[in-house]
Length: 240
Ligand SMILES: Nc1ncnc2c1ncn2[C@@H]1O[C@H](COP(=O)(O)OP(=O)(O)OP(=O)(O)O)[C@@H](O)[C@H]1O
Ligand SMILES: [Mg+2]
Image (cartoon, rainbow, N blue to C red; front, side, top):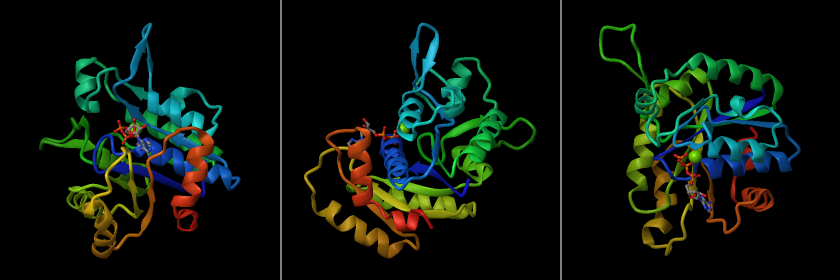
């Protein structure tokens, strides 16, 4: 692996999967070999006892991987909850080593790895048993342990300044490197004054670059995602 990014968001539903797909398709259009992971997925559809991770399946398809789905998403739960709560409800422990083992293998195979997070940074994954003090392992710890640089996906609308700054602050606090942030339009909006002014004020406050503004896509197919990505995202910086 030459490069890898962990795609986090200011919240669940901000567009981490679509932005991950955009980066994957852009890299593929540039002739690169890419791999993807959504290491833990909750809210999977249960089809005759088999859990289907929709994000993992979508990313595997977008990256054109031939690896088993279990490599893309090694840990799955049915309940649409944080991993710690879903694992308690479904009586299944989360084995972090499985994630790291698969990741090490995929890293050897691909030039670029794109790893999608679970919700936002402070989503709890497990309670650490060893320590006497209360200690939880969050998505932020997973990022640190995977050793990846982070891309933050933000909403365009009112409220995003606060959420984006809190997310960046939380990463800096743990000395996690940040590549930049991407503003994503997951819904059609009216394009109000907040949306118009948010990119500029965020860029002024933050010391990380705005890597692009991904518009709302009417068609979520490979070509449209790839073409839009190349027009909207800063691949020169992403490839550095
Ligand atoms: N740029 C976009 N154009 C069109 N639809 C989008 C775009 N970004 C996101 N969406 C849609 O918005 C919804 C939420 O986006 P997405 O699934 O990427 O969020 P997420 O951050 O990955 O959520 P989760 O935390 O559940 O993984 C999805 O239905 C997705 O198809
Ligand atoms: Mg997702």
